[in-house]
Length: 117
Image (cartoon, rainbow, N blue to C red):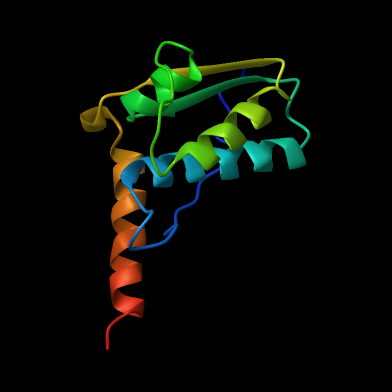
């Protein structure tokens, strides 16, 4: 792997009933994986870094998915991962993930700004 930075983005998945940080984490993962598929990068070595222990441990098969609002996105992510030949998930402490933190804050601030009455 040459360490290319392929994708960067941010957004708001939704609000209210049925939304959680885990829904957001999995929605972002699914979007990233779909983009990698569209770019025909499924044969490349892919390293997904996340500060979500839940996502990383579930995608690595260490923890099981029992229930939660995110189950649909979890299942979608599991199906997408099957398309990749060499994909790994690595947990990164939030303090060391300033880029993701900055993007999530930007999405939140833009969301608040666009929904002012």
